[in-house]
Amino acid sequence: MSKYILKRVLYMFLTLFIVTTLTFFLMRSIPGDPLASMAQALPDQIRANFLAKYGLDKPLFEQYLLYLKGLIHLDLGDSVVYAGRSVSETIRTTSPVSGFVGGIALFIGVGIGSLLGIVAALNKNKWPDFLVIFIAVLGVSVPAFVLAALLQMIFAARLGLLPSSGWGGAKYCILPIVVLCLGPIASYARYVKSSMLDTLDQDYIMTARAKGMSESRVIRKHVLRNSMLPAVTLFGGSVVGVFTGSFVIEKMFSIPGIGFYYINSINNNDYTMILGTTIFYATLFVVMQLIVDCVYVVIDPRIRITGEKI
Image: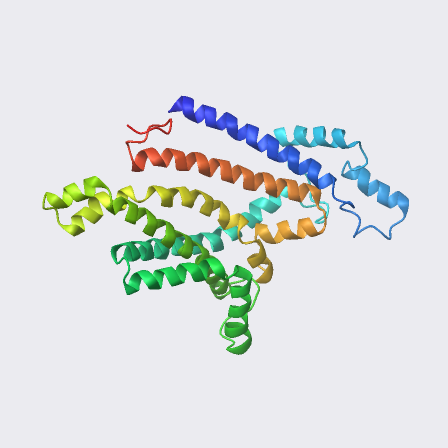
């Protein structure tokens, strides 16, 4: 196990290095610079001072080496757009907001989606199955921003029950959470249903039933546990999606989460903020993948750490 984890950690650092390098040079290939919109009317000398302050007057490869040097010391630099604010501080203060809203939505989505998937699998080709399929198709087909706009129009503009945007209390979280949980509900309903149907067709399920084991015990002891691996696989990406999947929603509801600042940094060519948040997302993703692989062994001991089955 320790050798496997060490190997995966080394791959994680390699992945982060590649992501950082590609993001750095791709950003520099975009026309313009971070000061194009905010310093265009300033005298050339003041503009030159801005560029020198952030090292943007140096050759491209030298900028890259300086950034890597700071990254080794866990220094993500200072935001160009938000003067005097470091990227690390922005991530530290905004990621909990995204985690709070997205985490609640994910918790609700996983719970309801898994329950719907179980119900659909146990009632194949019956009306509960068709209802779950309809909900899943609806959740996949309707874009989140369309649902967000619809809920804002109904509950905020017309009924006046909830605020359309802003941040400051529980009532501001309701609409974003409802929008964000629809995707996980649809995804987990489909995955859990498919996995359970596959498990129900296995020979050992037929053997358990032939031995006289009650249907409820067969479901609890054999089907549910062996059907959870696809859900665990999906959960790793879902946790990352808590932060990366809510960009547009945070913008529409004016939630001061990390996605809100990420969108603004892209619009303003804020190089350091884009790089810092991208590294944060990439780190979260590779760490979650490692955790998911380790959880596999706990859920199904038949799976060796090499990925083989015995």
